[in-house]
Length: 140
Length: 371
Image (cartoon, rainbow over the protein chains, first blue to last red):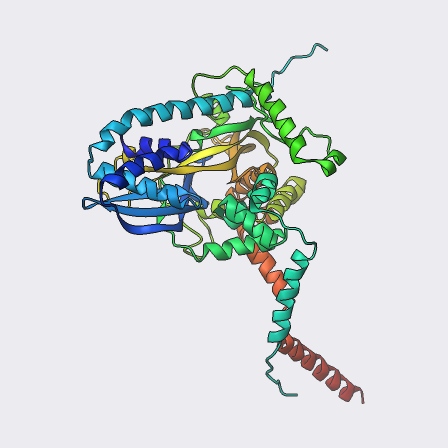
């Protein structure tokens, strides 16, 4: 599974799956910490919808970590102060880069978690639809 | 009279800082960061927006340390921001990707996808709720349980819905000009000081991190006649937008290999402003332009005011202060304006002595002439 989809699932899930997957790698391989979780900023570039130009809305606090497995460096980046999650994401990223066999078996777990996330988002949105306005045209 | 340099006050300053802590603690009460995060949503959003740093946790900490002073909290956040590295720039965030939790239009009753009120103070009576005085954990839990029970009856969707922009339909009708995507790299005012004339990217960056009160006041001034923009709000939307970052070292630029790093909540506004434009026959005709406003968190007044000022600054008119980019952009930043105003209370002994000397000298000369 490609990184974009994978990181969407692992971050939007509550971090438990990332911990679970990372632990299977920690138990079986040497994980060298290249960069301990540290805080930093990401500048956010946006497209405005009036003239479709680009601008910077501001910065967001992130935590990043780097881990090396089998000479492959994995990177974990997440919004907020999330030391553990950043480290787990870095381990998982390194595992994919090193093409470890475990990553093949993760696919089903990730897809299941993705289904659950979509279900939760859809449920939250359906709940918000209780505030949708139904206009009635009045007769004068 | 000669000037005498002085030093001192260290002990008094130490004692003053201790006194400040005493004022925060003397009630023998504390407020947890998570309590601030859970209960002071509007304040956190405002601090994040004005400091231009998205972190609800740090904003809550700043509010606690500043004892609720907005200007102090924003100052703390900006100061902290300057201590952090900035290793990444995000990929372009497209606002259409927003997971909308509130979306209204003041221009059209029927908008594709419908109007979603979400959570808003707009329809409350604005009467003080004295029941909140006795609110307890038990009563909160009871209310939450009842609300959850109510929500269980809601029919769930199969998938998440993404809302099209109202303006896209009007563009299809030819009522608004269509623009191609402009991918010119934006300027960053945190890296390079603002120079005039400014670029659109610089103006939007300054406006979005402007002080809420200042942005609102200047937007209001434009409506009252100190400007020439009085828009209709086309769409206000509040929701979460996803942030993606490319790998810093990988040579391949496959967007599927980007990092998703999380969401941020924003308020986005498109205001419709009627303008006269010349057509191919050199005749004036009425067209609409869009004023754009956006800010961190849910702060609709600021985003609407920003959309007014964006449109004002797109049309520089010397007669109106709100159309003057130097006037607007140099006076709306919280840290710059509160910092400059409050520096006046710091010692200016030499400056003032010099002024006194001048006045004394003038008076003496006048007296000599009169004599």
